[in-house]
Amino acid sequence: MTSEILILTPSAVALAADSAVTIGNRKTYNGVNKLFMLSNDPPMGIMTYNLSNFSNIPLETIIKEFRAEIKKEDLTTVIEFRDKFIEFLDELVKNELYVCSFEDRVMEFIAPLDLNPIPVDEVTFVNIIRNIPNDWDYDIFGEDAELIIENLNQNNEKFINAIPNYDNFDNQDEILELFKKFFVYKEFLEPFTGIVIAGFNKNRLFPSYVEFNINYLFDDKFTFNEINDMDISGDQVHVRPLAQGDVIDTFLGNMDGNTRFKLINYVENIYGNYTINLIDAINNNPNLNDDEKQKFINEISKIEVANDSLNSSFVDFLDQLKQDHVDPILASISALPKDELSNLAESLIKITSIKRKVQSDLETVGGPIDVAIITRGDGFIWTKRKHYFDGDLNPQFFKRE
Image (cartoon, rainbow, N blue to C red; front, side):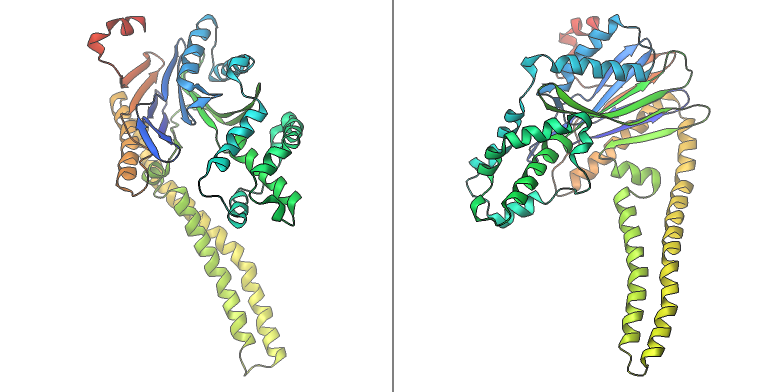
């Protein structure tokens, strides 16, 4: 995992990223590059988060090859850079040296089940494969949906052989289909690579950015999902935490999304349980006859109708509370000089790293923090950058850049 930040002000873009990479949720290494310069004409930078590979190729390699490729192009906007990057990936996966077949992906997925020294029992297996969101279908893959289903069916025997004690299940077809859907979700939906391209379009005085996700599937197939794109202007300021943004959200908005969800859920439960308890008390009251009970219950139904309004009012209150906290901070950020903007971006990543360090779980944010500032006049400027080598011993590297 990682923590990154994108800040757009009227005069500059700030980008910052940590250096941690987590291997199999067991070990963390620090030293991965996630922030890169793309161009100085126009000035553009790119950041990556979540997966660090695409089709088993390190993203650092892909981005540096892409950067060399676009020197021959006349790209002028973040959208053009994005479209060219997708074209570049498309050409890359057409080279058979860099692709996996569907069967390869299946075998890689089921291999750990065969190698597990402690066999998984049927109940545990079913609980595991049910632990995916159920609000999606294969249609999410568009024109590739039928091909994915066809490949799944062609590999039925491999999936069946990986299911523990398959013959003991009464609902074999249901378990098989659920296992295949679990495979697709875990391999083709959950693990994605996030990409952000930010900078100054050639004919604009204010900065822009585009964010999208990619995920390699099999053969020459991969998914592309646009998240957002924005052109700011005037006195606008936009702050976008990426990946692990809970600490940054708390700093900027007084609470993170998980806390907000829990508060809203808590208040909804209070309102809902209140009327339920009232109805139970009325039904269990021996001093009331059936007509009286029904009369009181009818009145309580009016309270239930009001619950939605109360819940909505509470959500509005939280939104206003956040806005009252955020507005002064954004106003201050818009006036920050470039060096202070760089310090802010670095500090927001650092406080996330500190929190992960003192928590009991894996340190998924850490290592040196890379920071860059992009302006229309000065271009892409590193304000903090790590190297795995001694710069004094490698002057040719800096001359090359």
